[in-house]
Length: 253
Image 1 (cartoon, rainbow, N blue to C red):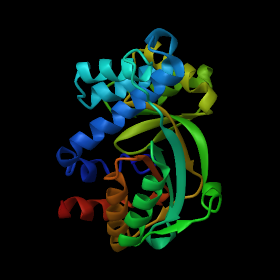
Image 2 (image 1 turned 90 degrees about the vertical axis):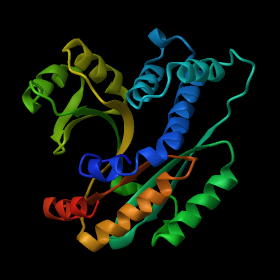
Image 3 (image 1 turned 45 degrees about the horizontal axis):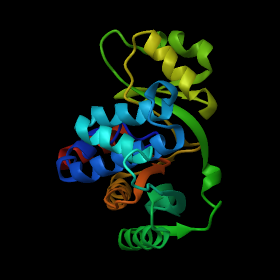
């Protein structure tokens, strides 16, 4: 799950992470393969691959798996990697808008599985473009809150690198920029000694929909069902879970 609610649902996500470890590994490996195919196996000249590898390592993907994925993606093993990115749009309960980003080698399978997950969990598919206007493509660097790292420290490090704003998401910070400035922002953080969790181009919601407890349950159930699909890489949504609702969800875990 990506987007503004990522920190608010951290506990919710941790509750199911063990059951999804294999699927998570597969998705991270797929990202590495695609990055290596597009930009080559040399990490020094492929910042997208650097970020894909870092994300995989933070999720404890074994180094051997990462190395094989790089070689496979770059065509060094004789295997062919051919994935297509497809974005589906839809709505969850309460009018919450969804952008579902898939990376697949079978468009028909991806489309069918997304439709079934949506229909079985209270979601509805939408026509292309009818949801996308709710989001803007941005470079997003996620930073976990730690001692000595606050909003001012981050802002000082990234201001001259093209960052637009630093957003406090409760459990962490997000640095927003134009996608073209993402590498510069990431580099500025590294030079300042600030560790980041992920650096990716994401769909950031323009307007957020505040949800009550029952709607939050339904939306999260749908997000979980979509996240279970092998072809789904990222899910972006514009829901906003108030603190008191999040506290009730935490009690239910």
